[in-house]
Amino acid sequence: MLYKNVWKTLNRKWMQLLAIAIIIVMSSLTYTMMFYGISGIEVPTEEYLEESNQEDFAIDMLNRVTEEELRDPALATLAETGTFTLTDIKQADAEVFNRLIASRIAAVEQEMPDATIELRDLKAITYTFDDIEHRGLIVKESDTINRSYLEAGDRPSANDEVALNKKYAEENGIDIGDTIDIGKPFTVSGFVLFPDYTLPLFDDNFFNLDPGSQTLLLMTDESFETFIGQESFRLSGVTDQAIKTDIDLPFVVSVMETENIIRSGAIYSEISSGKAMALGLSLFIVSIAVIIVAILISNMLEAERGQIGLLKAIGYSRRQIASPYLVLILVFAFFMLIIGYFLGLYFANPLKELYLDFYLLPSITIAQSPLVFVTAVFAPLLFFALVAGAVIYKNYG
Image 1 (spheres, one colour):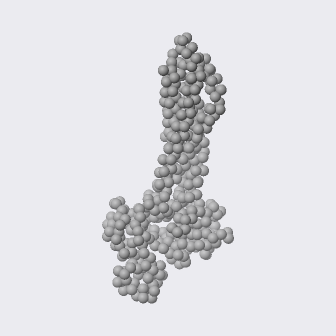
Image 2: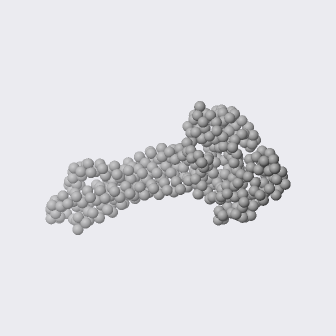
Image 3: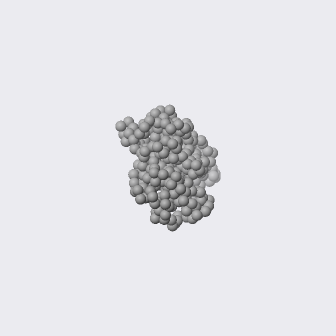
């Protein structure tokens, strides 16, 4: 009889319950959606960056020879002809260029003996695709650091083959095996990612994050060397020791740790802040719901105080009177949290795809986790039980 009476009382509060239901659903939905959505890229990204040996730091260096380097007779001879930038030296005499880079790497390794250093060679190009100007960054394959990662297909093996970003291909209707003209025709052999470009930021002075109009490109070393484009160089490094960012060498412009480089480190802060925000928003929304539930229960009990006094007079215990209120509220909250969980699971994939619109990362199919279910449903339910129980106990005190 008590449960029936409490049920009728709650039915008269359907508008308040509807508002509470929406808030409770949003709490579970927010946490589930953000946790699964972010985990769908975090897990494969961690494996990808480790497997591809992402650089721990990058060194921007002068694109010309220094006075000390001009002591090399071969470099001095080239400089006399007006050839003193790295790009010009490479085109004029590859052997001299390789010797120059080797000497720079040796100088950095002397400053950081535990580090492994490798040249990063890139070429920026523009081309027309479907009557729209597109940008490409051709990245030369590395030996040990920042190795390319294939999402599908194969690495280019012929000089007329190229691999590009999967998101770019999807945006432009390009499939593996298609031919794309990037100045000259190339056959798409696969979809590729590079760990030092998790954000499609190809130029610090041109902040374009449109994956549909720009892409990273991989081709054979021979095609790379013969392809005409604006070439640039930097040094990539990995180390297990502390990174020395104040290297005092004439050719060093700056040394930056990966986590501080926007093109490759932004994803770290994005993932960590995303998970923290998911939990914070969920707790905030649950807190609002709990406060409203507490007010609702308190008002209901105040309105029913006369009837409750009568029940006590005829022998009902405090537990018997309180149980229907607490049980029905918790059952109501439980089903709303369940609904929120499955809605969050449904919207997690669109959220993951939204991240992939901005970041060049691999992804996996979202799989459910018992821990997420418990956190999204039973953690706030316990919160509801404690607060609702405290309110009911106070009114019966």
